[in-house]
Length: 199
Image 1 (cartoon, rainbow, N blue to C red):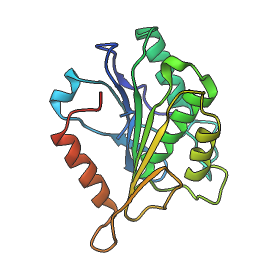
Image 2: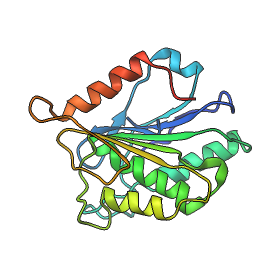
Image 3: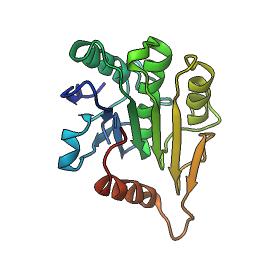
Image 4: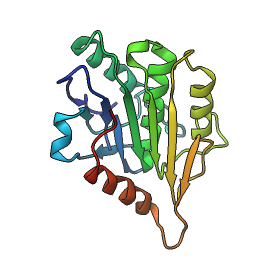
């Protein structure tokens, strides 16, 4: 597993977002990934966590899993904000869709602690997972939907051009051509630069 995420709870009354490219994982090479940057003014409005990522050490190369980031996040949040009660979002661009989904599964299904449930997963041209397998995005979405805690929301939105269609509740397709792998990310990230985080 990659680096421990850097960031912290500066205000327990704010959204927390987990990121390696909100936990926000950036694209890379179908296994590892880098850090997403945020507009400077976001740090005063949301609790942002960022870091590089890699598959869990016990994960097979043919089906990389990233559950350890859910473990890291719950350790951080429970130590820094034991009474946390705000939204949590994970976001993944390209390869980063895998850890965004796996971290959410670990928190929502593995721990099931109502204080630390992921409320929203945003996939941005998420790739590298075959939807025909038991570790595909459709499997992630199905697991999350069928294991929801009563009365708790977990919204999944998917913006894609080259990546696979998922059974997410909200799909936005960018036509190829003229769109390419970076088009959906450019659109979503341009909104990030202009908008404030959800509250």
